[in-house]
Amino acid sequence: MHDMSSELRIIDSALGRHLFVVDGSRIYDIPDDADIAALDGLLDEIVPADRRRIDDAPLAPPPLQSLSLNLAQACNMGCSYCYADEGKFGGRARMMPLDVAKAAVDRLMLEAAPRADLLVGFMGGEPFLHRALMREIVPYACTQARRSGRTVRFSVTTNATLLTDDDVRLLADHDFQVAVSIDGPKALNDAQRPLNGGGSAYDRVLAALERFDRLGRPRHLSARATVTPAGGPLLPILDHLVALGFDSIGFSPVLVSPDPRLGFTSADFDRFRHHMIDCGTKAKGAILARERYPFSNFETALHEIHRGSHRPYPCGAGAAYLSVDVDGGLYACHRLVDDERFAMGDVASGSDLARRAAHLTERHVHRQEPCRSCWARYLCGGGCYHEVDRRGRVACDYIRGWLAFCIAGYAEISAQAPEYFAAPERHYPPKARPATREVPS
Image 1 (cartoon, rainbow, N blue to C red):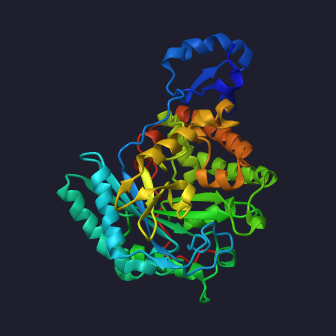
Image 2: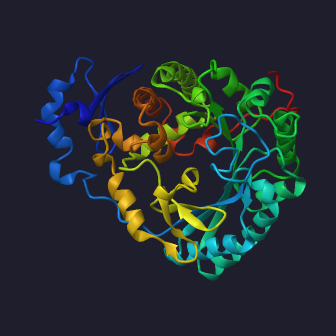
């Protein structure tokens, strides 16, 4: 007998009842009166034991494809919830030297697969505190990639309060993916995200958005809004950020913070799930109406489900992705910088294949509890390494509830607006951006 609750899940949508098959993240329509017990014999037909997509074998460390460079382990803001201690990661403010940044790019070229499409990300703290280094490294990476027969793309995560005209031109000219940290309307954002020197961070973000409109937009301009347990409904915040013209907007709840009061508990996630579903319901309605409403939490889940995503890890950290600290140390990801338990070599001597392999072996979802018996395991992958390490798995019920909503939404959209999955940007283009960014708060 199978543990049916870990292999199959019945999902109800506005169109009827559906069967979610965990292996391969596949969805089937079933009769409205069907139940799990009646479907037991069906599992071996759908998923023969010798054709499972994921087994207990861990991933061998693949060639590197992406590095993030922590240019500035320092920040110009004093966000009380910041997991990175204002970018210092528990230490002192530091800046990456040019030789370390070049060695990081060279290391990526040395350990990447031939003809790979590579990604160099810039992180902090606030990376534009060290903009001179970014301006040096972008053309250097382009040259090194071209010489090695590869392509390279760029990303940056920034608070956008320091951007100059030249910064914006750099981001537009090199097709950056730009993630801007902004928590909502002015009053909320400035309360949660104070500038160390005073003034309004929100006003500075609006000035940056005006520069993008005037001088050129990057490849993708997203907003990342951090949510604390004290936060209220999310839909007004999402509406506000959509009106500012971002290409996508996503919410991220605080789990790890220097102030434990600012971290979500299991109880907080129940309210958060309801608020997220309110946002997802509006996004679903927009898609069905052939309109664009760029709620990335929902859209990302839809496309993962459409692809049949199934993975034994939550992300590429420690696999094809590593992060570089200011001294050239390699770590599993940008959130785990300077944590020796997740150290994985250095840019001079190379990535530590043994430590990467141990990481991938220990954190395979089949080795995690209670993940190995959870129906959402191959969409979730076991949860963010940083958050699970610091807080445990306090978000599991939320993740399952949110994914169940997204699967039901997928069933409706794939039946009623299937063209969305072919090219959402083409079918549902953004509405005209407002002539002014004076959006009511």
